[in-house]
Length: 202
Length: 164
Image 1 (tube, each protein chain N blue to C red):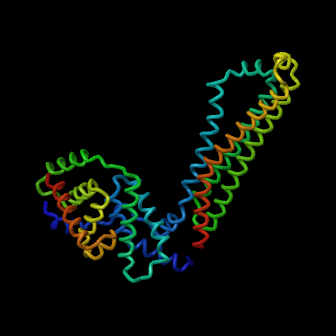
Image 2 (cartoon, one colour):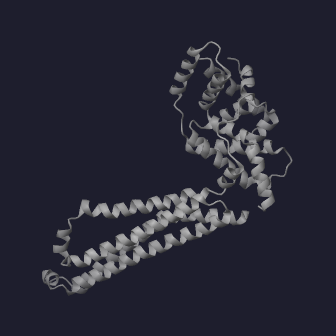
């Protein structure tokens, strides 16, 4: 085949099978945020599933009960509460995603971006508050548990023990906070950049 | 961007979208990737539009921005097309008929272009669209002499793929 002959073929090629209307294009140039909001939704679902599945793999709950001397009632309440909270947030994330997918004006898009950012913020605050509550109650419960106290050898300094247990607890929470910051922080920064861009273009 | 300007941009883009589709087809191998690239090019054009002064035609400016977007995205993703598959398809097409129809020839041409690297693709597209060397050089940010040298190599490579 000679290249010059192919020029004719090239120039006479039909319109592409894909053809976008003006409204398609209008939406396209505003839709960078959709995929980010979609990822926020996906990540929240994955996180939720991980929280449900992981305890089954690693911990036998009856063991935990015996070891930390805390009644099941307390654990169950906290468990259910955290599932409910997670489910509510997943629902809101999904709503945000749906809303952003059908948005066609940049003004509405900006609103949804702000809303999504706020939802993520509240989500992190709620999860961490739950963590702090669990930790505090846990510390209190073992401090009043006769069974537990009687098991501590006499040569261990009690104050030091409480101090290190609380410290470890808060370090773990700090790590969770860092994990959230990193995971959602990247996505939220991108959303913020898009928001700024949209405002500039308005 | 104010509203009338935005409306004008969308209208111009809609009317000239054929240019972008050609570039998308050269740089991607499936519909989903084609649409993604189209959207990315649209966003880049939209961002750059306030700086477009109208010194050149809209379509010329668009061609340049679109091609550069495709090149830079292609570089980032470094996704490679399986050349073996293309050559198999080429042989298949050749066996089918001595005088392939225009559609088949076009499909063959696209397949061959898809197997080139990012810059060679751009060169071949601009060659087929009869772009002058001044424009080719400006689009790729190289000198005209360099553009000619590169063009000859790219054409030779394309010819070799088409006539194995």
